[in-house]
Length: 293
Image (tube, rainbow, N blue to C red; front, side, top):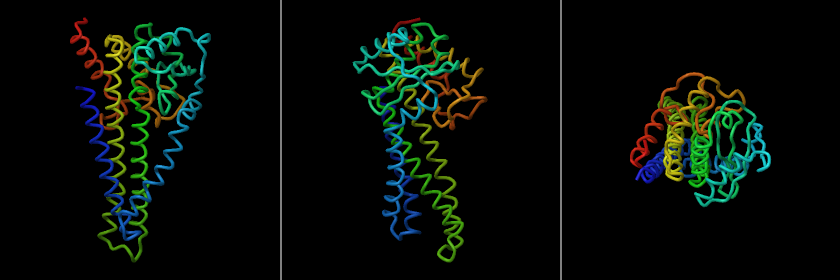
């Protein structure tokens, strides 16, 4: 029921994004093309091309940006053994395994589908967690692979990018529209240009948080031990708060199991991940329902 609810919420969020984009397309398309449909399609196609390229090459880009190295079973037998065990339980192909040369404990999964998946862990993660906790983290990441979250987030990114691009044009037309633009329409264009990208970002972040909850739940169900992941999240929250990652970009924070770039506290609306306390609470509730302590 939880997974179904998360799917329904995600669908409604996408519908809102489409509606928001249609509104921007109406404003910009009417001003430039006298046809809002043409404007909407034009901006959506541009954003789609950019994000399509990003989708096919995103795994290579993110691995390169964090200096992650694909490792063989001989190079990292413990990590391979745990990932392979989880992959077998979820009936997925064995993904490539990578290690990130960072002492900040964290992990992420990338790749456009299960056959192109890569599961990456930092050196700090392997040092901090025991085998049970590491299994919980890998189950979470393999759940992202199974749920095709990279596809979902790429679609969200496409829509958000299209909205941002269209809003920028709306802002320029509002500021420099000249005789074609009266004062009232200029104010409308500027207001839309400012508020729409913020709304799109909030929805994109909400989708990211929703996918994290779903991966927690499905990963814990997969191995039947929610407390493994709960213990791991508790350790990761403390360690990443004390020692945030210094390489990489905050734009990729949503990839990781916990946000690795935090130096302070952000309000919930602008968080890429749900509060760790709530995630742990949900996992402990699951454990209680399974009769575990």
